[in-house]
Structures are given as structure tokens and as C-alpha cells.
Image (tube, rainbow, N blue to C red; front, side, top):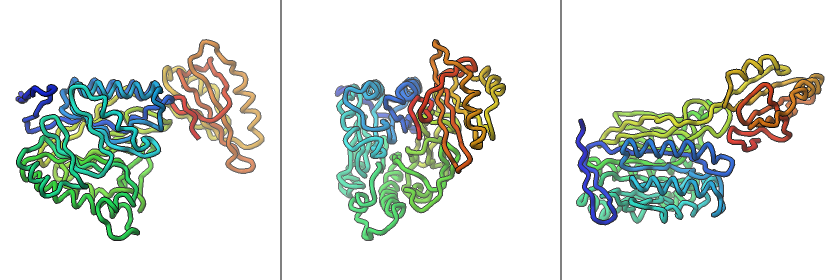
Length: 408
């Protein structure tokens, strides 16, 4: 059995973790919003409970805690605040700035005020942050200066986090002193990661764990819909991430869980906490990390995300087949798509129109037709709620996601 030494301090019950392995609960892409509230809160609530039960020492949220700008009185903001507040009762929390359209700058600062026993630290700029005896200490610049680094090496730290939140190219070039404004974003970020790597090598040599936290796209990663992200406009290459010399590199932004290993060190996405769109592949969850100097391990802890079914027809939908699917689709969210020519379009509408609404049905059905050519139509029909062949409710408008929000 492993022995854990925890030293309680008189100022607020903060602790200093002295075991070789640091357990970090890594969450990302919570996307709290009115339309996502049920899914996000059920899954994140489960995840925080599991992190506490697993005795995680630190929590990291690597961006996009919210889905868009939220009003102060929004129930979704209140629920998220309660979850973060509760998490800080058991461990320090580091929150990273995500995509600006999801987390408008300044949104996360309010969470620093919601701490209870342990500190909540918000990383909004490019920086390094040491964790020592339950408190976070940030560098004044993008990396620790020589004076700051000497202090960290003398005092010690449970871990040093290299934080790279969402930034635009101009901001990062100013922060790291890039000379050429025309340099590609991946190259500029690579320069910073290499500079951080030189600092992290010295920290690791002194026996201090090093952890990277960022929000962006790794060139060659796979999205939740199975698309490989390959191009010249993505933020990171795997090579540059490993050059940061972090034992563990914790990423956000891509909603599919995936990881890469090199000589014991690991780079990983946990994926989104819940299933917010149709067709998302794989399990949803968060990562429980075991981080040591020179090595790391990340295990996906699956959350109770919604289950979806996608049915495609090349031609008019087969109502008999839909009835059979409905028998095994209780409490699942179903999307039905079919493609028909102009001559058959009205016949499909008449068939669906024979299925009358059921007044006690908790779900609804939405249908929309899109012309893909002058004589070819693609239709989508979505059941948002428990699917039953006897409870179709036609609802005009756009397609809805599993959370009930319209999608384009």
C-alpha cells in the first residue's frame, strides 16, 4: 500500500503533498450554458464527485468552462460556480482561459472569489505557475526569470504548470518577443514551448514535476466526429509540445479523448465532459493523471453522457425500421436523415404527418429540408427526448442537438 504524507497547515487547511506521484483531475470543455445545462451539470457533477473520491491532489480545467457569454443571474453560471466552489473544498483548482467566443475575457476571474478551503487560480496569460503547499505562485513573465526560478528551486514545489491559454498571434508574439510578425502561429507557439522547456529541464533535474496546460488544436489530432485535423493553421505540433519538457501536457478544445506518449511523458485531451452534438464518437469523461518526475499516466474516467443514435436513409425513411429502432432506443436521442428527389419530397411529408403528437411525450420531433441541388433534398428529423414510434411530434425549425439547442 502506498503511503501518503499530508501536512495540514494552520492557514486554511492547505496541504503539502510529499508522495512521488501527484494525482491531477483534468477536466475540459464543460460548455455550461442554458441549452447544455442538464448534460454539462450531470456529467461535471459526476466527474467532480469521482475526483474527490479518488483523492485527487489538484484539479485542472483546460478551457471552455462556459459555452458563451452568460448573464450573472443565469442558472447555468450559478450551477457551474457551485461545482467549482465545491471542488475547491477538496483540492486547489487551476482554470485556464479557453476560446474567447466561449469564455469572453474576464469571465473566469470571478471564480477566484469562489474558493473555500483551497485556492482557485485563473491563468489568463502565458505564464508559469508553481504549486507549493497548496498555493499557486505565478511568474511575472511568460516563463520564470532567473531570480524567480532560483526561488522555486530553493523553496521547492509540488509541480510547476506551464500555462498557455488561448491567445492570438499578435499577443503571443508580444509576450515572447517574436521578431517576425508573419511567422506562423504554430512556429511562434513552438518558440515559447522551447523556451519553457529549457526552464522545465532545470525543474525536473531538481525533482520538481512539470505540467503543461493549454487550449488548442494539435496538428494530426482527431475530432469527436472522426475528422483528422491536418493543416498549417493549427496551434501545436506534437513535437513542439514534447519540447516543452513537461511530464504531462494537459490540453483542451478538441472534444474527443486521445493521448500520445513519448519516453514516459504524455500529451492528452480528456475530450468534452458531455455529449453536446450528434455523431460524436467515443466515451465522454475526464482524465485522472498520475504525474511523476519524468513520466505520467492518464486514465479516462467515463461520465454518464447522453447516448445518441444516428439513422441515415438513401431515399424515403422506412417507418417500419424506425419502429424497430424505437424498441431499443428508450432514453436515447435520435437523429434521422434521408435524401430524396423533388418528386418524393411531399410523399415523405405525408408519411410523417400520419404520426400524431402524443400529449404526454417528454420529447419532440423536429424536421427540416435542405436543397443540395435543384432536384435533390436532404432532410433531417430529430427526436430530442426518449424516442418512441408512437410519440412523434412534428416541430418546425432547425436541427437540435442532444441538449435541445438548434444547430445549423
